[in-house]
Image (cartoon, rainbow, N blue to C red; front, side):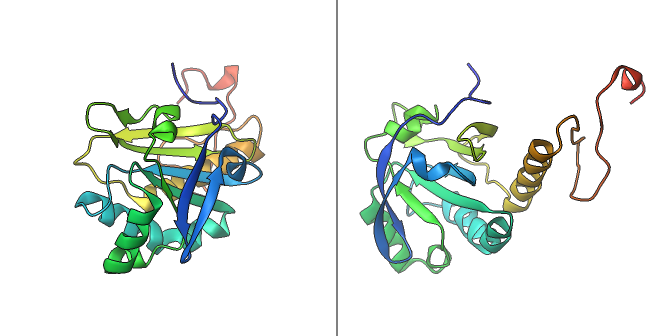
Length: 187
């Protein structure tokens, strides 16, 4: 079953943010746009490149009113240790959620059961707490924060402009489509 347009399931977890340990729940995802960004593990190879890319683009996400939550099955203690020892991870200003019980990874259907790790899953959640974008990639394929920004802008545009849709490669300010009988077979 697809997770698109489903509400984020309840969870409670410990996280590391801005030098502090904080609690995060599904309620924190409501009232604003959020990105929940799963990755396999701390102290690895592709993961720090993705998380650094998100950190480098975090201000752009915040300008859009979007909060980022990275999640792995590591603990919040591991996130702090990684933050303290890695130049790439030290850049992170967003929340790093620990999921050692695998509850969140199971809720978002990204847990690799036999490994106890999460797939590379990206979820964009609207202010009502409903999932609007799902992207899952294989472990060796890193994601691009610039492309994620484009998708978030498209999701926000569609949410605020009922009756319009964003075509492939749509970028902010470009023409959208208004689906109608007149467009059938004309595109």
